[in-house]
Image 1: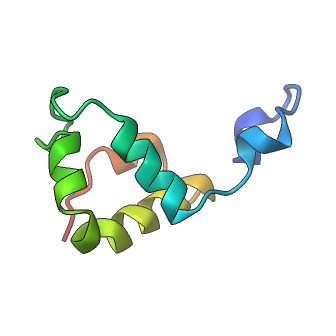
Image 2: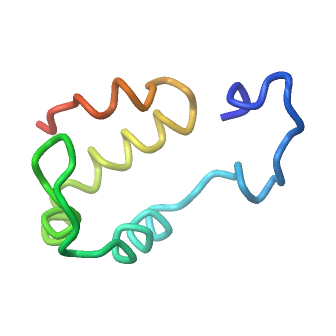
Length: 81
């Protein structure tokens, strides 16, 4: 996350602090359940409905993105297995 701000003023620590599974799920629940589907063909509704099954994969992706191990461009083409 820090690499996003190289050469720029650092943001508040709270904005770049790590997050919990509960916070990730709260963010998911705050999304409009009827919004359009993403590049994977699924909208927020299916992720909420299947959260207990897909949570490990979603959290792994979110943590990898946070740690700079995967880019947003790479993550939008992933297939969840």
